[in-house]
Image (spheres, rainbow, N blue to C red):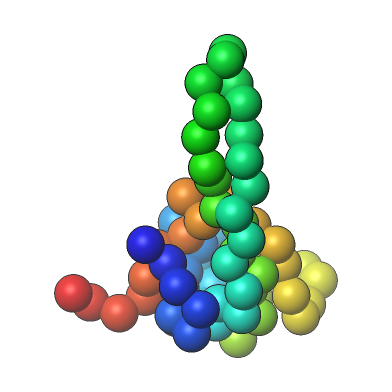
Length: 67
């Protein structure tokens, strides 16, 4: 699971970012309750045209360090 302080990459766009905060979002879909997570990312190498910070679903991210 992605945690505050992790270096991450976007699975599809690349880039390199630092996780600043992780939020839990309670989602109900077809009567099924589940928690999903969003992370506030400070981009160091930005895959987006903008800059600074992005709130993004954690399932779109992967840790950049090799395990």
